[in-house]
Length: 89
Image 1 (cartoon, rainbow, N blue to C red):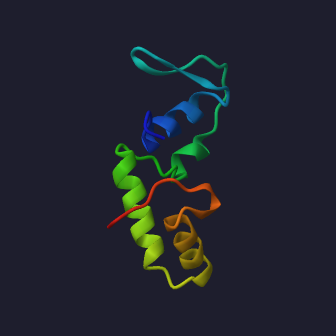
Image 2: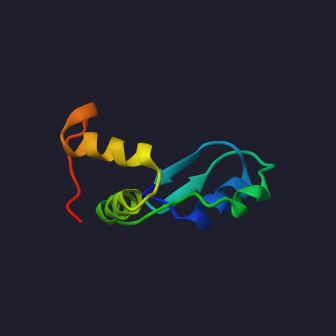
């Protein structure tokens, strides 16, 4: 998710549905068309800053009114379920 943006992925899918390749100049679509214009309407949830994205997600989940989410975060904070990192914001 760090190597592309929503518009880039939408453009790649519009060209072809084959896998793209990340080269020195960026993403290259080597597939044969047709593609699908529908990819331009999908929110791919791309991000450019991994740490900030995790912080934003954890903050949003901590303020969620969904009880299961809070219990899961509490377990992760205490090192249960294999979680190794915590968020202090």
